[in-house]
Image (cartoon, rainbow, N blue to C red; front, side, top):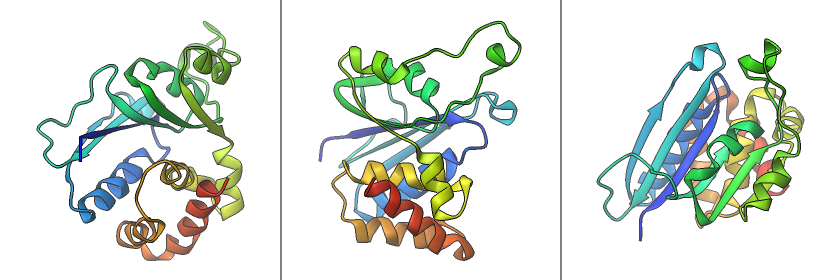
Length: 190
């Protein structure tokens, strides 16, 4: 298998680290060499969080450079736009339509950009944007946005659904497994 590059981007506290751990576990179980690298930034203050997940027959580096991401999984709309330059020309963005104001917007120094999905599509990017927060709440917890997004990613990523569910069972604390399976299904079938 040629190396696949997945970027998981969001804002601190949204669950991107659990998502990367689950994805890494899934890919290791499929027999791939997997490298995961986390960049926290100012995550504890609502800042940008980026995780690189690379898999293939042999992966030498955990870092993804501009123009190399096969997939960008974004927890927040502006983060998807911010990392767009990392997407391959034929890559896929899976993003939540949730908008979380960054500090310049909160302080009034800037305004949140409008029509981001349309702007990303205008660059030629393939964008799958859905209200993951509403789906997570439907599953039973607003904190399940990360699993909704992985469910949506699974729609594009060629690994059988049973393997994803097995990874959820292995990585998620037992008391949250059923909720997360429901969130996964809602994202996958949205």
